Amino acid sequence: MISTTDTAIIGAGPYGLSISAHLSDAGVPHQVLGEPMLAWRNFMPPGMLMRSEAFASDLYAPHAGYRLEDYCRLMHLPYAPIGMRLPLERFVEYGLWFQSQLVGHVRPVDVTELRRQDDGFLLSLSDGSALAARRVVVALGLKGFEQTPTVLQGLPRPHVLHSGEIGNLAWARGKRIVIVGGGQSALGLAALFNELGAHVRVLVRGGIISWNEDPEVGRSLLSRMLRPEGGLAQGWYPYVLSEFPYLFRGVGQRTRKRIAEASFGPSGAWWLRDRVAGKIELRMNTTVRHVAIRNDEVVLEVSGENGPATITGDHVVAATGFKVDLARHAFLSPEIVSALSLVDGWSDVSRNFESAMPGLYITGPASALSFGPVLRFVYGAKYAAPRIARHISRCHAAEGGSRAFDAPAVPQPLAESRTGVLSHPPAAAFQEAKSPAE
Image (cartoon, rainbow, N blue to C red; front, side, top):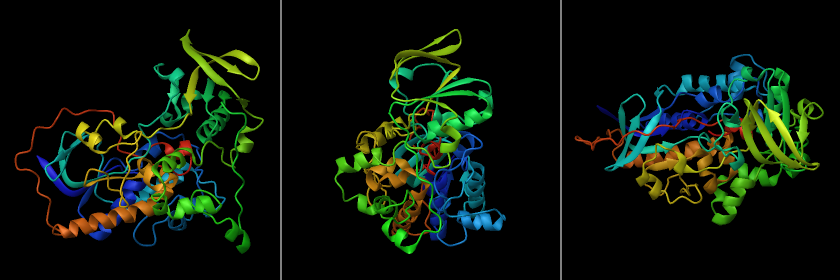
């Protein structure tokens, strides 16, 4: 039996839930596929703090009353738009509350295959059912796009892990942990591991750690004019990227790609400096040359400022970021991947987030090539959710409004399902760790 809907949203994180809230308000039938906030709950460590300011950590509804500030007021919790140390657990609770209030039609399933079907799409789901939809929104984060240095690839878990798959840290108590990386994920994990009682070393390729400035609370009008507060950071450049992502599309593709990949690169949050500096061994200008597993420990041959050295540990964590490549989503059929005309893994989408395949929308970090680095973070949903919903609503109305989408009476046989997809945002917020992606 194949159920039908107008629009299927793949992903139940901040982007998927925000888009759903707007589609519901517009009266567009749709389904959200995925467990709400799952990746934020399962792939990020307890005790983590969100790097984004609280005002930039909202999910977005079409009407007032559903921002993080509203949730905190309702629950009698402290809130400050800037300078607040926002725990991961509170952000997750807020996201689940948002879902419970505005998004009731969530199916906790993964998508195992998405393919074109007549004038719509056919989705195979992990519970064995199928869903026919006229339109599909891929609202995933960075999960599945983990980037691991070649020297660490192919080594067995749990000896070698990526920072995007850490989750609970209880296993690390008393262990020797080597972290490769010098950005927020590396430094944030180092602090948490250290405070848990692990012995931590951080291997940094560069020569310095870039620390973010302490937030300025209660700034003067002149200060706010000279350096306005955007969702990404203070200053006119991040403000424009944060608040006017549509302007980004007017820049040449090569420049857009460079900005999307390199802007707001590795750095440590202001609240991490005192938990890391002077408390954890940081090896600067260090390159990992070879890694092997010997006698149940990880042996790393490295080169650095003092020449070659050997470092051993129980576990190595690659806190080395993510690289968007939609072809790595195993649920996308070869036909769809080919039609997307990917640019080094990115999909260049329209001003309404519609891909080169009509009816298929892509948002979140995978759309940063078109709308800039703000789409790597939760704050990007502020622009994406209403934009996508308006376009889908117009299309839905032009096709007959409430008229149901008719699935094929005799569907083609489903291709064998492929596994390995999580229809949820990644641990991007931890890696970036602005309150990403999903």
